[in-house]
Image 1 (cartoon, rainbow, N blue to C red):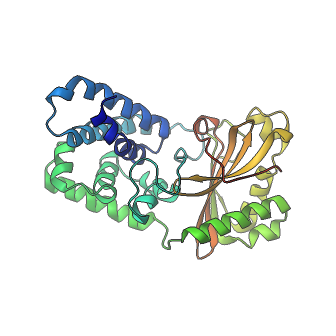
Image 2: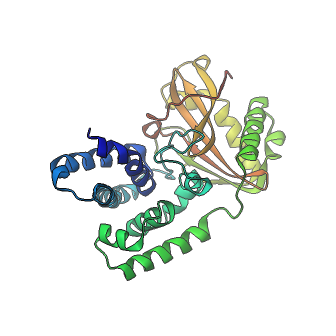
Length: 305
């Protein structure tokens, strides 16, 4: 891999992941961009413009294809978890806004945008490219790009969480959430949940889980306990024979703390919370094995159930 390409690879991965919401798809896009770069490297005058343009166009094309497949996806669809560190993976971290742009909450909101709106939002509001640069990358006039950016921001403002949470509170609530799950008490877990909390489960039809969101503190608490206590039917659905093989891990994912249940180093549950005003306002649950193959991370702590 050339030094020039390597120097831009993290940014390309960051753009592709935010546009697509899947690590595997983003990696495929970057690999295809590499092939095109290898053919054109000697003729390129502006490497960054070339690589961002190629990556963005490939990501838009792939997103259009996968959106058609998502129409037949079984149940709710969530982004594929991205393992991160205290610095944000996928680019050079530049503060809270860049970190927040890979949060599960915002990526879910971005799903409501068209592929072009999503690409413009990522390039302009996350990576701060100029309108002329984005227009050239998308082969649109600048006025059209500005309109796309305006529409995208309006959708994001409408759908994103109204209150941001500081990292310490997020981590504290996540720790208490795990403790409540292990203690097995519905009431203790409900105390951490907003009355209108939503749990969004993504199984793809490949694991035992509801196919629609669960709403309400008691309903969510009872379901969470059932999942986190690893019932036999759930374990069987993800190919685990013995509960003794499992352990809980706290990891960093999508720029915040997340909970994983791991069986023999293979994640079978990935849980991330959205915290508002000190309580859990949303739960994102990924149990589709197809989305958990690449999410093994350096754990912060391990606890056997």
